[in-house]
Image (cartoon, rainbow, N blue to C red; front, side):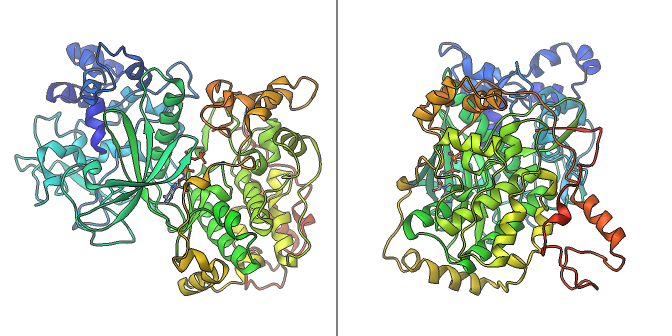
Length: 620
Ligand SMILES: Nc1ncnc2c1ncn2[C@@H]1O[C@H](COP(=O)(O)OP(=O)(O)OP(=O)(O)O)[C@@H](O)[C@H]1O
């Protein structure tokens, strides 16, 4: 559980106990005083409280208003805008890397409803049936120990195990003070991460724990970059020499843009805290201090693809192949967890000095959620945006990332995103209203062209999935041991690795290519004559997080639209029908099948297939 959680939730033994006894309406009626104690304030309520009364600028005061174990969201008025409760990451028992603790007894799922988290797409069961960080709250022994009037026995020698840091998950032995075993072990969900604390690094085993809370472990260093939602600094742990990236958003109680930034960062935490993959930037932990929310992330020192392109120009094809394969690998993992990134572009893909790719910036990411009604918002960066996002007719789903990947491959090949010859608004209409696909440069190999064409199919259902694309010859024909990554990357960007230039992060700020500028915004607002996507463009203008925080696009970001998602990606159905017609094939998308059939050879195989009908609707 992050250090700040208790600050926010203001747990007391009594209130916690009442909360943990279950918060079903039935129980709440029974509990009387307990109900009052357990009353959950939305984060919005917390943020708008007058300074004189429980000022949120003072973290102690958060505790006075944020009772129990959660809050219902930043904007309780809108189910779409309902924020994710800040996640409660778990520290893995040091001696038990596999299983996680499970709280038995009264720390029931029903207590979770008080946080409103059931309404939250990021808290639904993933395809493996695991509940992500909602369950973390249940799983954490600490989430209930205070409420039971007991505290955990600390077995660690580090001050991290002190009582003041109970929320740092010090109950690794699963025992309460009185020696009772209060939790039992469950198998860890596949792909789940149970220890997103900064001291945990899956690729740096044996990292010693440091004293104090999460924030006290890290000293803030130089500015690495600025994003739409805050600043990113280098963090250094002077006890163990480890580095991290600290993404910070300021908490300003009555500032809507601060609220939006917090919401966005909160969403990023919610998703990232459940992910662990070599090609996805690793989440370490988070902390809410008096006036800012900080997220601790794996530090990726090479900068983004966008930045490398700005500095060194277009990449050679082997580099593109290598990076693309790694991005795909990250996407396949993400999509396998029904999560859409929604903002794949060079600026959000980081490269480490070994040439290892890390997909970053999950502020836009969403869990695909099957529900009876749905709402989607326009999100993404215009030049990388899939047509279905612009058109907003049938909703969208995982294939939007595949389109954006195609755009990113073009970006790597030309150092510019597709449609870059058009102004932002014109590009949006080009994407949404025309039948054109971006130009593919002649100098690319046939495999590269074929790969890009596959990604940039206007019909989302025709786009192969990330897993399928991993079998495409463009990325399949690589041997990519780590050393190869290093060599390819060193060769392509010698100065990035010889110390002759340390790229500054400030020059990473968004360019016109990445973001609509203010002029674009005014023009967007003024658009009246377009027929088809006019409403969509308006919605984009008001909800796209593609402009600087000061832009009216950001300040007036209120519009969201209701619509239903496309049916599930039907590529597998297409494959199935293909198999019916081509007897021998076992799996046409994997190399070395019995047939010599190459699914990537020609596109028409995927064309003209009607989407599989589905009655389910998906919420983003
Ligand atoms: N893990 C990291 N390691 C190193 N640098 C990072 C890391 N995360 C972010 N940065 C730097 O900070 C910059 C801004 O980060 P990021 O894009 O995540 O912020 P954001 O507010 O979410 O941005 P956006 O405007 O794209 O939504 C990046 O371009 C990069 O230079």
